[in-house]
Length: 275
Image (cartoon, one colour):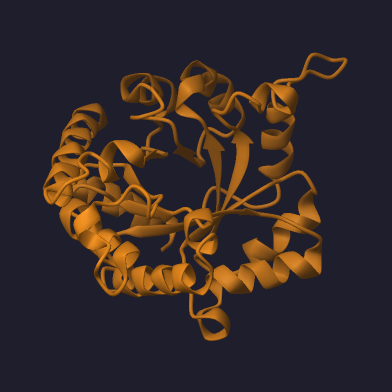
């Protein structure tokens, strides 16, 4: 999905909601655990319930890889299901990959090369620490996106991301200003945590036109209003992710309808912010 298509989708649904499919066997409703593929069945019902309100879905690879072959099978089936709604949602592999160039090329094929791997995500999260040559292979695919980690919301972010050089420049600012030149606003986004919403002003000074993937709204306590205040641009420019607050809104047989209620509430708030 290219930039124009993504913007049109946001306008059509009046939403910039991304639903994180952090699907944990220990947390899904008990009545699903006797099905042939509990994780896939959980994902399928979450997708059906939230699709009218969400523009993106983000499977977190850790929750699938940790279960070995059965987990990967669940991921493939989930992606095949999402592909049946190709024009209705943007898909993100939350994989945080990044390595020397030839290895990153193989990672890119894994997530973007349907003929090679069977997977066809729109975007993949990438770690910037190894520099340009570790990121460029992901940018070689047409209408695919790199989502580069810039400023995360976890406690340990201050260990590196907020440190300053002798000129007073924070490391995350250096990551943004340097990496923005590797791609463009049509194939690169940046991760900026919602719990650091006030710092979006700094981010927007450096990358005013790029999309930002913003986790941390919902269960992690980030404010959607604050994110919109500091992060919205003329094209919206935001994908706000919510995972636990939506997919685990209920642990019972009504989990899908409760997920729909949570997603609808966020969409309605987003619609007001997009006016």
